Image (tube, rainbow, N blue to C red; front, side):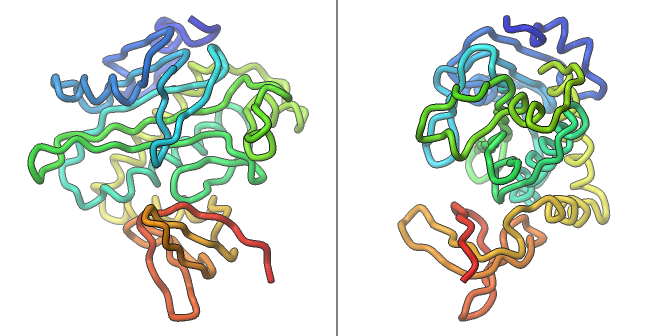
Length: 270
């Protein structure tokens, strides 16, 4: 197991209810796949799957999540939402928790690129994939997978990613941050924030607080954007707000539209 990510190190770092039971792997196909199977077998909410290395990690829209052994934090959390009303906010909660966890553990001020990336100055540090397990029309469980680039060095990224991706070590070095940190501590920090915000979704004012804090970290709000949809269509306008559902409100020439799912590109100001 890579340094700082042993089961013992993780257990000693946990501060909340989430993280136990725990499954830790040196190598796995996908933590999300393992967590979905565990959920089908009755895995409880808050159970976590962690891997030092994924060989079949998934991103949104069928993309592959790349990492080398020992360089990333890759984990999945089983969720069992009581209702489907807050489903759209799960990626928002995961992104906010990831951003705050990185800030608390690694002393980096990071942003959120709607809907599922954590970035620093436009460079991607982390990605999120929420998958749902259905039983007929009912949501049986959800799994939130998070992958964070941790120990990549300058020059490690392939050419097609070098300009758009970064790692915690790279960004800390650029800022002269030298304090010690471990992936186990980062995992614990993210899980603690995640559990807190997730619980708030069932409280009065909780969803609004989640949206407000995520909006404050957004790097697309206030900018001209193009949102591309899976079918090939797109919409252009100015990203003006996050909707209560977690969707992105885009002001177009025809009026405001709420985008629930899409791929966002920031455009240069005209």
